[in-house]
Image (tube, rainbow, N blue to C red; front, side, top):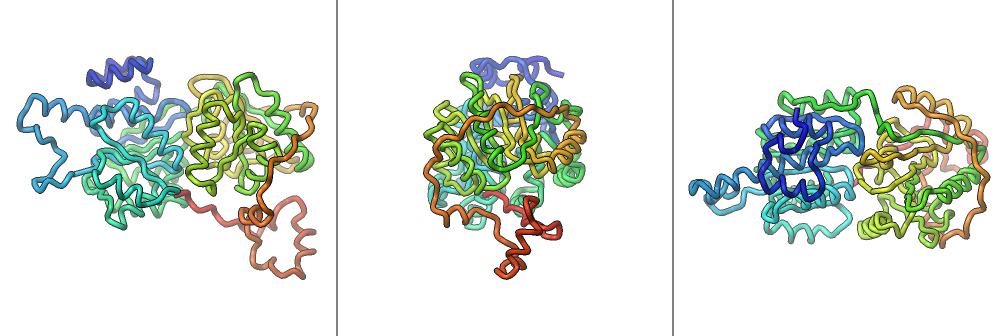
Length: 451
């Protein structure tokens, strides 16, 4: 197994780029995945968050693209390269990277541009921006496409994009990509791809049924699995508070944000979009260095907020799980779960926003007494050690930020099931739900996958 990047015998250009970024030693997942990927093998890779998975699939992509270029420099038969048909129509793109969110797609392309030569062109495509912008960009097809499933299908159906010559397919956060919310879109995209291709799937978590599904899309894959006994970074401490009510939750979040170390940042996760907006407003909004991100924010708003968070102009970010995967933001000292996450995987990926690059971090949950038992069962399954924390003296809340009109807030609240729409039943509904949410026989609709 390679102990340095030099052991992979990479091209001089790529070696120089890695060295310029201070990278000489591959991480364990890079040691396990890069060589088989360069050799053309399919790879199913699993490693903890913050372990360098992005470079583990970008380095082989760039290296494989550079090698034909080097051959063309010495062999006139390769001068035209493998990229054009006799008709002159470009056989592009050659590589496709799928990501579940816009932010992750943009981050992957940013990393790609750090290490790839200018001639190795790329484009990120995602929802939230006018389609015509991508139509114009695709008039000269790039070699590498990074995109979210929904926008890719829009471009494929209108025939502005062809994937018939893709040789290298990557799914980042593959467990989410193959979950029910995305699976239909992924199956449709695969129909546009050639059967003879190399497929690489990367994620921090793989449920057994998701892994079995993934293997049906691959050919005899190499399984590169690192730190299988640890579901989240080992330098993250885990703890939780038990509080009696909603007002205590908000005040505790405000108190915890006020105790961050100098230069530290925090991310606060909520399950629903309307809760993100409401909580950010009660914490004071941007006037108190608190930003918010949900899938309902425009792409421009999301990019602006993330940019301010990365630069330190915003110290705290309140978000849904749209910000839980893949985002690499330095110096996130604490991840706060405003309530119990809906799944163990959600907990792991949220926690992975801190403790990155082998730094220490903490993740805390704010629970009701009823949620405590479920949380303790969850961490036992994840083999994570946690402890109950004593709540500090709570600080008074700041002046709330200007809130949206009440009708706007209602837009993001879950719809009331039809059987409770009758006003005559509302009194019974309040008695039976109490603080426990809807009756057990009423199942909340599964959120639609982000485009």
